[in-house]
Image (cartoon, rainbow, N blue to C red; front, side):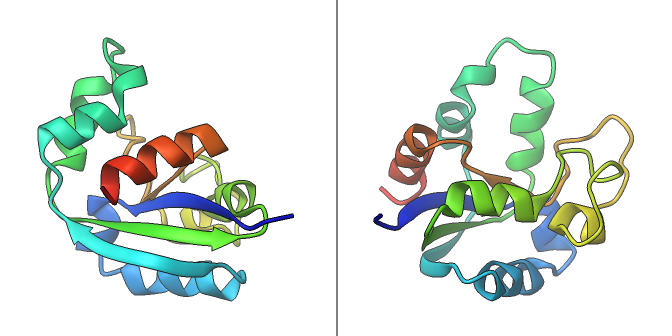
Length: 138
């Protein structure tokens, strides 16, 4: 079995709160390799391409606005079952419901209806990872 690759984003709330190092530490402690890393202030075009499947949904515009509100750290991570493993490490999307021991469970804050402010993004499939890595690491 060959190692997978995935896109992990430390969202603007994670960067602003100084949690990038802790999030990267947890990724590496899990045994995954950070193959590439960059800090980006994403423009609307990149964010619209990244979140294209959500266009028209009620949370789309607030999500685009939030993700463009500050720098994002984009990570190309590699490892056996890294997509599944990182999503487990990240925890439930809602930080209040995320289990202790996960990134969102330990470090996330309850922002009410602003669930997009949940520290990290991780690709949800090999197809998504390939598409997203192509956008963020073109």
